[in-house]
Image 1 (spheres, one colour):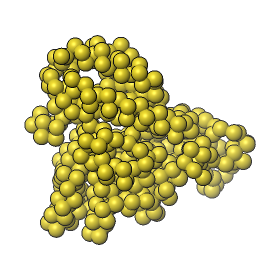
Image 2 (image 1 turned 180 degrees about the vertical axis):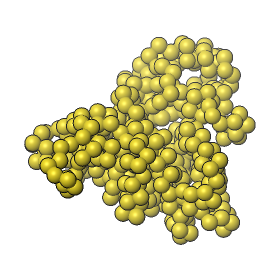
Image 3 (image 1 turned 30 degrees about the vertical axis):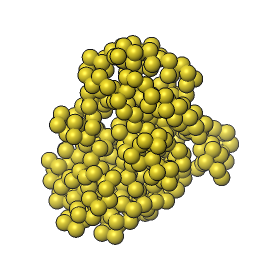
Amino acid sequence: MKFATDVIHAAYNNEDHKRAIMPPLYQNSMFAMHEINENVPFKYSRLSNPTRKILEDTIAELEHGTHGFAFGSGIAGIDCIFRTFLRPNDTIVAVSDLYGGCHDLLQIYAQWGVNVIFADLTQPENLDKILAEHQVKMLWLETPSNPLLRLVDIELLAKKAKAHGAIVGIDNTFATPYLQNPIDMGCDIVFHSATKYLCGHSDVLLGLVAVNGKEFAKPMQMMLPATGAIAGPMDCWLVLRGIKTLAVRMEQHQKNAQILAERLEKHPAIAKVYYPGLPSHEHHELAKRQMRGFGGVVTVCLKNDTIEAVNSVIQNMDMIYLASSLGGVESLVNHCYSQSHSGMPHDLKIELGIKLGLLRFSVGIEDIDDIYADIDKALQTTL
């Protein structure tokens, strides 16, 4: 099936659910047994739940993996991956400009004895040097990255890492399986903050993971219920409903984002626009080769790189609100320095390009003229 069909019909057989056309919500903490040790698929919802199972099978199918897992939040999903496969004295290599929450989490793992190396993997030779000097247990990628939308060559880096016996994981939140499938490019584990595009309506916290192979699935199947960071059935049901419109939403998100990026690149208040769909983007050619589209996030840096200018923009938009997340049908703005990457030290943020004047727009599916008019009006106050 093509993707737009698959998101509607993936991993669901209505014959297994009284022929219900849509996946039912099993709002149950437990399921009845007829005898001791009865071999039934569902007993207790921390272990497994029918609604959660449908969602887990769906993400596995959409990401071309073998098994899926659903968590109570995105960061819980990343934590379960690290907790499952990393031990004290192991080495993990992560892209330097990754999501701030993941950066903070890796600092905790460093305190527990994991050797954490952040590297600029837009230059593949940097990974070669690390692999030559360290026994790397895991490579963690994020592409496009949050918030500067930098790309790395997934297939090339995965090939290098796996040649040295490393596990390859990737955060695919910004692209979604609509725009790229990292397992097809050599990754072993694909993570999504389903809070974002997969849900699409800003009403759920949930993380999803797809893995490729029993060697990755079996230890995670033990870790997830043991640590208890499972997603509840209502949240799973809402994400299942959101996924059914993923294809049409992503088309409108990226259509609007492309137009907005092109307009803002000419705006007198903007110093730089970060969007892979622009020829001026440093990884535009890689994006064309690696992705099936450029996504719905546009990041800009104001010429007036001050907190006063940023606040002026935020306060003078009427339709677009300052918020911590992204990927909903509504347009939002995020001040990366103080929100998504607030836990990073100041010097590191500046080194990575996360300046005071940086704003990340999650471009919604509203009319693009209304989106641009709201932003333009606010930007005029900084000139």
